[in-house]
Image 1 (cartoon, rainbow, N blue to C red):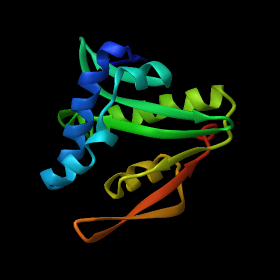
Image 2 (spheres, rainbow, N blue to C red; image 1 turned 90 degrees about the vertical axis):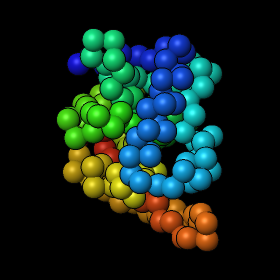
Image 3 (cartoon, rainbow, N blue to C red; image 1 turned 180 degrees about the vertical axis):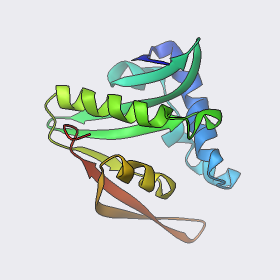
Image 4 (cartoon, helix red, strand yellow; image 1 turned 90 degrees about the horizontal axis):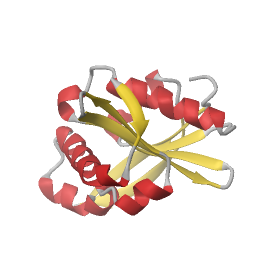
Length: 153
């Protein structure tokens, strides 16, 4: 497996990975439609942000994206194609993202996590720094806000 900078031509494949990975958690299809804009990776997004893909033999296994605003970094996306979940791809992408942030001298990386992914991030050194509340279909959702020191990951 190698990790490389994403190209704008990867955008459609990255969007498919994000949708498939979110679907993996068993969310209803109409929720996925609600999140469609958040899960869509445009060529413009790839061109404007650090986006990296994990690939093996030309097959895209997953990707991450960092959003950098002034002195803050946020892990905006980290998705692994469902056949590769649990194989270490996510961990390698996370480590790569933290090295990238550390090389840019960020003291912290923030993550607004899906509740199903919080354990993954905490196992890799993130800690809960807050929560964001939302609602979908009248059901409250609590999204963990996590912070990680990229130099310790």
